[in-house]
Length: 394
Image 1 (cartoon, rainbow, N blue to C red):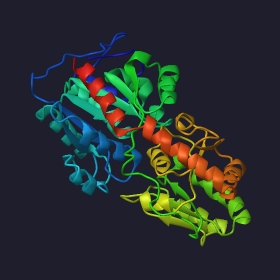
Image 2 (image 1 turned 45 degrees about the vertical axis):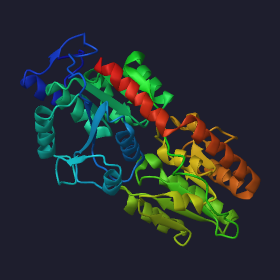
Image 3 (image 1 turned 90 degrees about the vertical axis):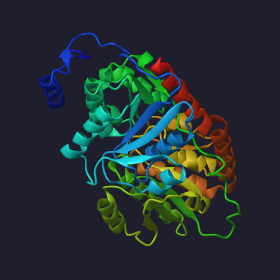
Image 4 (image 1 turned 135 degrees about the vertical axis):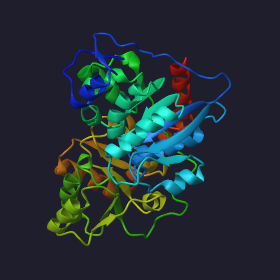
């Protein structure tokens, strides 16, 4: 195996010590392929965990909809996180835990290595940061025929060390055109080695509220992981302005994540603890969409967020930041409003604008639903993956 001539990191020195890599200016786009004719290709979707999150939901949609006559799918997890295990079971998608630990450690990486060596894997698809790092290294060392890296948010390429590791993947899948531009412009990945496959949403499952909301309490919904990328600090600062103009409105933040304690402190310091609710991540977000006037996302890093697609499919207007793939998804002035990131005043003004105008909310909601149905179907997302996998297998 050959890697372009960059400075060696610790993982590369480890691989060199085993004779697995050498430094070269060239890297073959496609290693040798092996596939038994008539036998479904074995696809492994490698995740860090299966907790509540947009990537995890997309993995379950993909794993449960790929044509079983052509692809045999398994999900492998590097940690014990398993919030969505019941959904995987309902959809008959096999899940393997490589460890019972709550963090990725040498033991779980060792199990991954043994699994790759002892289980036939035709296509290894890497999702989230740590799998994209170690999956590329160990996948190549184990001589997996096809390794597919993914990038699903604007901060991902740097965290995944794509500047160094991109040649170890046969192909890269991103969910927004902006991410392909980043990989090509900033990290040197050839455009021909990247495919844009937008997220898909089940518009039969996610649909407008069955009953009208008239007379119910007013609510702004933020369905987002409690992570710095989502910038809840700006959202809470903006909601102070909103609450001053609309004292009857509450903010619901739904999600799990490492910053729960920090966000609790921000809520307490805002003096709005009675108006801001922190709700754990949920298997089914539809009741929260149906009970809300609008959805808001204050992210500083994004790809093409699944929760915004779900909100649009439920006929909910959107206020979001103008970052990465969000402008590709939310059409400003038609399905929602876009504002600059880290700007509480602009975010508050957009939220207040929609709260003040019921007809505008309804118009945005109808357009959002139409966009989700026409452009972001599950079937389209799955067919794009099937075509790519077939081409890569050769």
